[in-house]
Amino acid sequence: MVGTVTTLWRYPVKSLLGEEVPDAVADARGLAGDRALALVHQTSGQVASAKNPRLWRDLLKLRAEIIDGAVRITLPSGRTVRSTDPHVHRTLTAHLGQPVTLADTPPEKATLERSRPEEVLAAGAAAEVAHETLAIASQAPPGTFFDYAPLHLITRATLDRITELGPRATTVEAERYRPNVVIRTEAAGFVENDWPGRELRIGDELTLRVVARTPRCAVPTLEHGRLPRDPDALRVPARHNRVVPMEEMGPQPCAGVYAQVVRPGRIRQGDAVRLV
Image: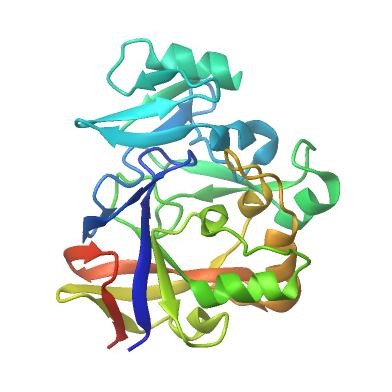
């Protein structure tokens, strides 16, 4: 047995803060309700992502939750707006200073901008640095807003190892890495590096195929609601776990893994996780 599920997270709006849930159904589109919506720039047509901190770091000051079948977005002031409100686009545009539409379907051939993370480390989140344009959801079903694949997993062992290797006195927060599933395991840190190409059984039914290690961008270093900036959340993996995440990429700072659903099922906190 690999370990047990400790926490589950879903993010109803891409790049916004999400919500912890006790259980969820997982299928080919990931956890039910996860990344169901995203903000799309009205001029460029690109999907808004905090991977470009200069433009979009304020997305991580907004929290999205599913309430009574709609998504409720809470602004830093405490004001809320729902995905079903007719003024939702105007409200979010005013807050972000960018013309955006809250969308439930990606534009055709949807892309996002990913700033080079180590340039962000050097120059700061507000600096204009080099970036690349990436197609989204290449390992997820069409019409979804995932960066790459529908599920992201990380172990407590990896989070603890990042803490040990850095200057922090307290454990680095899982929320910075935006996982869906956090797994407690007795194995050594960065254990997920060995999982790509293998399958995980979670609980009685759910089966996942691990497809890649997760290359880290600048997002873990940014403010996340109440959490302050933490450059070491990226700096430590860059120094101590620079590995090849997938065939088409060279070595990158990595933490966690991406996965696809092979067999749907319900996942719960406390479920056993086994390598098949």
